[in-house]
Image 1 (cartoon, rainbow, N blue to C red):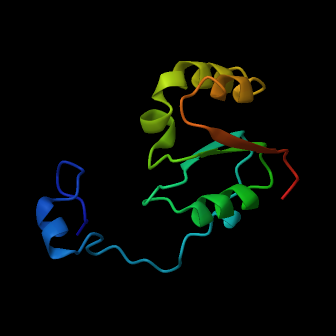
Image 2: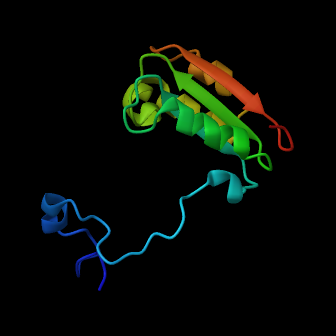
Length: 125
């Protein structure tokens, strides 16, 4: 039996009962360090994100050593920082990402909320 209903979504009764995974057996915790990516990764994390704590996002960032990665901390931002908190400069940010990220800092300087950008090359922890 699957935790998902026929439509592919978790039925509301699962939410009410607190049984989200149903019959799915979870045998080991996920560790992002064990699943290395090689394409550039962009992290946008709000300082006040209740869903993705900074420590978890930083762990992923620091352990993806095979990829060039960008970590953008959005000061005062919450969850879904790129769309919800940086919407005023989103077009410029996406353009920079699509062009390789070299102009990311400049694109972010146009945002209303301040940001801090950290870049790490592949092979560096």
